[in-house]
Length: 183
Image (cartoon, rainbow, N blue to C red; front, top):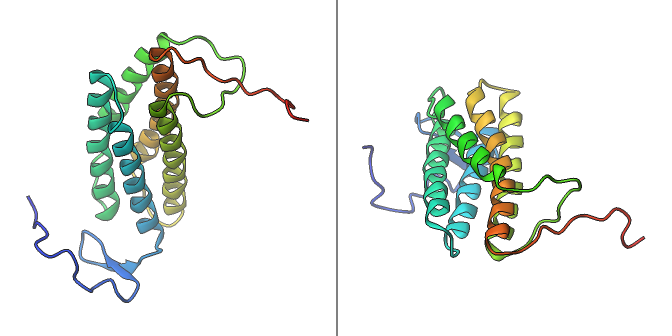
């Protein structure tokens, strides 16, 4: 294990720069920092989701994803480190397929919402999509692990299905978007 923080503030970032895991320094608005910062934000959103009343298998799945996201943040913080691979993606896909098999076919878009846990899933999904966009931006200037992009893409799909799954478990119907409803 690496060094643990014994002092939280170091003053080394007071000039608008931050250190990467390889010791290099970059601006705090660097594309790499934006990417791992947004992954951290996503992980925090999942922490809010995990604070809800959830079935044990959902809580365990969210916990596993949070560990993956911490690994992904480390991968992004340390140039050339690879921490996310095909096994991570397959695990998401398996969980996604299991939950989706229990849901009805959608003929319309649904509005984000439902029970609080489902609403938190939808919010986490939008942060996940932003993290994915930040990785795409980073990939314009440096090599990015393709599995990391795939992971975030799959995770946003999983969060959508998880929201529907949680609503179904709570007896809450999806709220379908109605084109031109108020027009």
